[in-house]
Length: 450
Image (cartoon, rainbow, N blue to C red; front, side):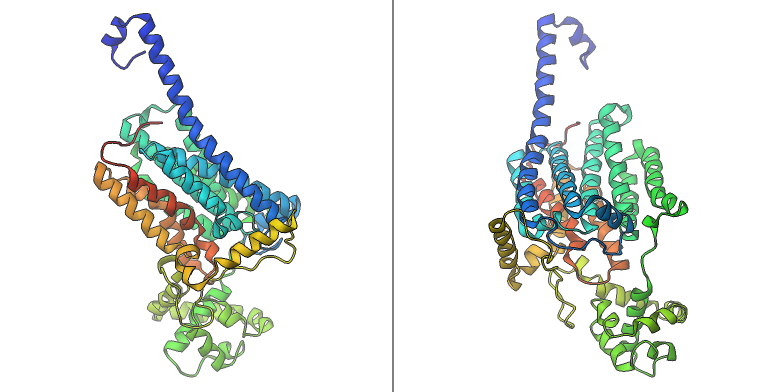
């Protein structure tokens, strides 16, 4: 029935039939764009998969995400990387469809998504064994679902529900589960992102909070059942690296518990090179570190009570990748870390593997590091495009919705970063260029409901 009952009553049957046909064609055209983008991205990612078979980088067990490691062992690395190409291709298509609700034309967002699938920094990551891949896919899906729900709020249909809205909430739930199961950092990212989303989506606030609680309860339930998926991350190296920087900032005779792990000079050197925990863990006695775990924890708690600024100083130094456009210069671990290709990666076609490895090495030129391998620049560009759109269309809620996943990643990374691995900010490398397409939307085109 038409939104105008008077018009609906007076129009002839043929006019109403034409209106229904127009709506049907419009719905089909809206589906055409995300399917086309997802299919094109899938085709490109399959080339990367064939080039990096069974996995371009990474090993079967990284230790950071036990459930992911278990999936790799159970399914075979090639099966996991192939599944990752499908999930990321779907996430890119879904995000392009969400941006279309805000007036972004496919001629801008489509090529941007295709470029992300093709470029070595992002394409090779998708076919690598790393929990950052499902975490990135989860962040993309979370952003897409948030944008679609916001479009409904703008149109005034958020309170109506319906199958499409239930699909958006299901995608949001799946995204949070994906993030939560990649480890404590992913769970922190999801929690922060949802807290940012809640004020912008008042009509579904209760359901969103409930779905988030259920999603975050999944790893907790697995832990209670004895599954290692929710095993807490190893805080031991992070706390020790905090102590190393504090020792460097305030030279003096270190505590006996510290010198049992490594000489005082090594603690000072690790503090000077504060960008990664490896600056210390590569030097210390691993067996002694296990024995002195409790004493080390006690020293760290004392440092947190007396000098919380030094703990924050250390976390910000290791979390530089999340905020700084350029890499630091304070030691050998300050450079952006890009994993080398796995020795087991041979590809299904040797020439394809060689071309992929060559192109990835080519783009490792130091002058391109800030542009292609560090996510901070793209996080800021995406945020700037969202701010511009919000100003043009008087829609300030777009800024937190568009930036929630990236902000959650940045804050979680600041709290728990162990080094400068570019993969930990991959979400900004994917989201930033796509959000940048919001700048192409003029004041004449605004958000529309799904």
